[in-house]
Amino acid sequence: MNTQEIIAAIALTKLKGLSLLNARTMLEAMGSASEVFAHRKEIVRMIPDASQRLVSAFADADEAMKIAEEEVEFIEKKRLKVFTLQDEDYPQRLRECEDAPLVLYGCGNVNLNSQRIISVVGTRKCSEYGREVCNNFIADLKRYYPDTLIVSGLAYGIDVCAHRAALENGMATVGVLAHGLDTIYPSMHRQIAADMVHQQGGLLTEYTTHTTPEKGNFVRRNRIVAGLCDACIVVESSERGGSLITAELAMEYNRDVFAFPGRAYDEYSRGCNNLIRRQQATLLTCAADLLDAMGWENPLKKASKPEAIQQELFPDLTDEERALVNTLKSVDDKHINQIAIDANIPYSRASMILFDLEMKGVVKALGGARYKLIHK
Image (cartoon, rainbow, N blue to C red):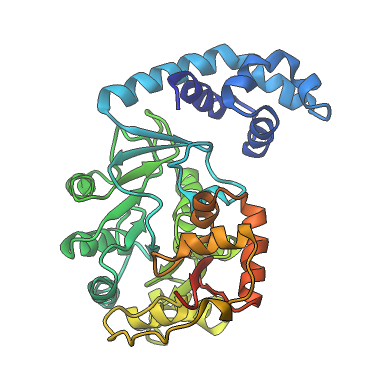
């Protein structure tokens, strides 16, 4: 994407009074952030039902563009990455969420569209039990899928425990920040943040430089942690807290939610126990539980040679159906967003075709909006 489009996208996020929903509406109507600014004096003509508030949001357009230009200078100087909502490299899982950020800033070389991504969240006041559960789970998961990307928030407690466990096991991990990339909060996590960047992981935020880590930012940050993943795992939580907000958002995004149970009277197990009791989360005790619930194949089991199936046994497939089937032939499974991209078919259309293929017994739907061929 060209620099001018990046500047325009960042400027959109700096317009006071412009909601995320309105910004996305204009992007869809005009095709790009650059076009939005080019026609900012014609908003009513371009969007007939535009409110006066939407029109007046562009009163500070010049100031917003100036801030965006300065931000791009910082990005280029520090060799950071920037993803706009329309970029091919923008996290596909997050893009499908209606409140996905218009712009993301990243540090590191992590693939935000990895085949498997889980978010691990929990209390900042974790117990020894919580640390042990977190460490053992990630070490166990490595045995099955060492390429799983671990996402958390780089906060005290379970967050940083998850990041450390991933690093110790040679797995990529991403910290989603509630501030700009010009600082690290809490400051004592600077070294682990650097280690994450250097070990195929990284840092991600929707906030520009000079953004301080205010309370509201952490709440907004949680939607990114939830939206990035296939499954959200709560390790320890009290009856209230940010991790439960993340779990609730994950449910809204149709992500699978899991929770480790705790002792009945432990304060920081009540949140997890409540999620399980209310059937809002699946009980988790080990990585194998996650594989079973998500429909991920166990690579440690000796694969039995599949019975040869003659081509004529398959139902007749349309060209579109065959295109989707072909994208699944060389992988165990794939997320619906990636299937749509690889087959060059719109998401809504791909969803309908996959449903038809499932009814024909050609593909199987797994957890986390992933699909696999029943026979290859």
